Amino acid sequence: MVRFFVRRVLFGLLVMWIISVAVFVMFFVAPHDVARLLAGRQATPETVAAVRHNLGLDRSVLAQYGSFLWRLVHGDLGFSYYNSEPVTHLLVSRLPVTASLVLGGVALWLALGVSGGVLAAPRPRSAADRTVTTLSLLFYSMPTFLLGLLLLYFLFFRLHLAGVDAFPGSGYVPLTQSPSGWADHLVLPWFTVALATAAVYSRLTRGSMLDVLGEDYIRTARAKGIGNMRLIYVHGLRSALTPVVTQVGIDLAVLLGGVLVTEQIFGLPGLGQLAVLSITTRDLPVVIGIVLLASFFVVVANIVVDLLYAVLDPRVHVH
Amino acid sequence: MTQSVIGDLHSVETFASPDDTGGPGRPVEGRSPWQLSWARLRRDRVAMGSALVIVVITAGALAAPAFAALVGHGPNEQFRDTGLTVDGLPRGPGHTFWLGSDDLGRDVFVRVLYGARVSLFAGVLASVIAVSVGVVIGLSAGYLGGAVDTVLSRLIDVVLSFPFLLFAVALVAIVGPSLAISVGVIAFFSWASVGRLVRGQAMSIKEKEYVEAARSLGARDLRIMFVDVLPNLIAPVIVYTTLLIPAAIGFEATLSFLGLGVLPPTATWGNMLAESVQYYKVAWWFVIFPGLALLLTTLAFNLLGDGIRDALDPRSGQAHR
Image (cartoon, rainbow over all chains, first blue to last red; front, side, top):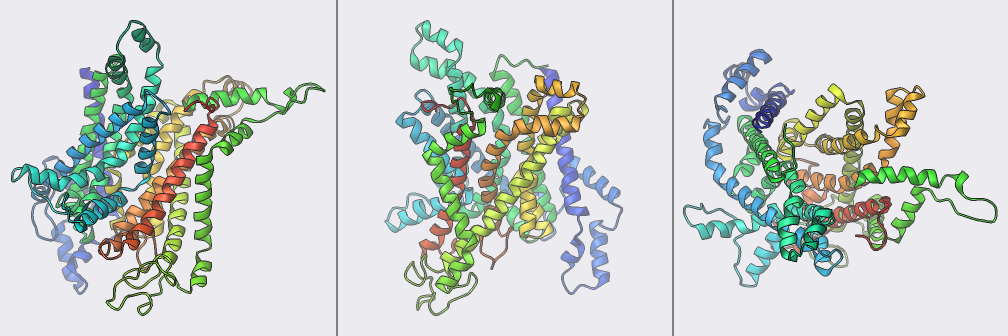
């Protein structure tokens, strides 16, 4: 178990390193002149050269990469090109919004997905199964931004026109300030982030449950007179969840993409909004910081998921 | 599940080969597994309906210039007099503007049709590239095994654990948005899951007797990979391609929506929806029609993909699933 954990963490570090190289190559080596961009259109060659020197862009690629990596392992992501704020400060100030969105979204995604699958599986082709299957295909087919727009249009705007202000259309209230306002502002974004992935999971859980419910040990349990509820929820669900859990790590990366769009639509001042803003202003250190932070999160989540997988399924032999 | 598809396809093939069609007086029609699958697919009303929707949308996309000529509105022409109300607001659906007009007095119907061209082109091309790359890499990893497999599998793992959209968006921002870049980015981030799927399949197929037979006849690895293994992978690859297309279409639309895909004034469903965000309160048609076109297309491809999967699975009878 310990060896497995160590190996997993080492692989995680490798992935992080590869991502850091990719980011470095993309932003510093790719053929585009950051210094010229920053110095502005009318800059003289001397100004451009000065800016380039200030940013350390006139050094050799290897030296640049060395200092990039050196600062990175010390948790220093550099300064924003535009307001000279440390990137780490910017990220920390925006993190609570995105964390709220992601955690709530993941909780909703798993709850909806697993319960949808469990509802559908015991009786294939029943009304419940058909409803779940149809809904999941619909939401699965809908790009996140379209779902967000539709929720905004129908559940905010149309309700607002009808005189019901059930959900605010945009903005964010910190949890510490008002828990109810926090949840209120996040309901629509949570659903936007969660529904597409939940749809995949209800299909996944359904298929997995169907496989498990056909196994011999389920028949044995049934023969021993175990109640239907206990059979489905205790004996069936546990093994059915293992293939589902392995998928979670991968889909977190997809979910983070959804966050980017969702924050944009609902005006949430989180990391996704910061990313889009920094991209349009070409504020590279901030973009890099966000990409690295998100990758780090995905890598850690994948390690946790793999460990959870080993715990959840007693049949998994970990060497 | 897909693994047994291959095994079964193979065994069915030996049964239905032309020599086995029975003696005289016993007219047994030999049907290949592909014919059987086609028959199953034709009976699937949802799949055929979806195929029809895809055909209609494709036809609409191809005939976009003809429709533009018919209604007399170019895709980027602004009709400030006829297309806008006195207050300068978009006009609702009616005689001249079938699906209404947008904030600049352009015809939403014509633009939705032109948007279909971009969506279908980007979606199909990106999927085909992703599948080709994924098949070659997955096949090499699964069939060759050893060090090649270790390296390629790690590569697949790394690409799969990238925060996909964020990275793509950052990349597009650096290189500058365009259709070619969008297609490249989508393909780059989509091949890995194909690779993983194909690798697993190739690993089980290479243990089959017919591969051993080919090897004992002196066939080289490259030949075995593409002549003996690949054809037996076609079924899951077709299914996967059909399911990848809607994902790629949605991804292209997302990039356009964020202003990082195809740039205005070229009409795409994504950038139409992005423009509609400011106008959804006064012009519902501006949101609903491009959104509906996008949803209908992705839904049709997904339903068709499901149908093809069921049709290619010899175990799927009428009662099952």
